[in-house]
Image (cartoon, rainbow, N blue to C red; front, side):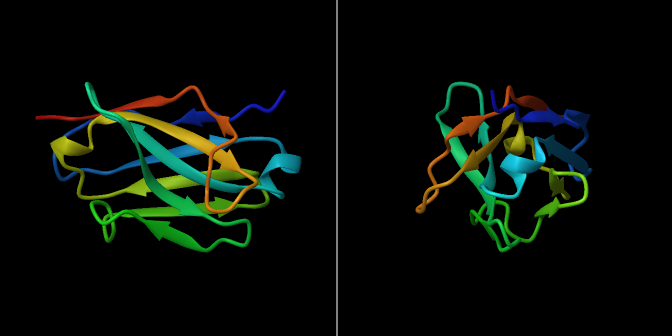
Length: 118
């Protein structure tokens, strides 16, 4: 059973920073592209950022320049560094893994809550 385990969510003030982490097995980490999705209250689940097996990142326009996706092959962990957070970034953030292109998640984590509020 593939597991994606997220951590790092929490409450932060506007303009602040958080770093999310997603850990999985080395087997999955070395064979799958990965991505972060988010779902705000009352809205659909949307893609935030992707990173290929070899580490090529891509972002949606709303987070480009503020968020950085990365992966650490020694720890089988993917990260999402989120800076200059805005209230509209409030959502449950999900880690995903895909072995198809275009990106289509095959596995999902349980999600971690990020709340941006003063």
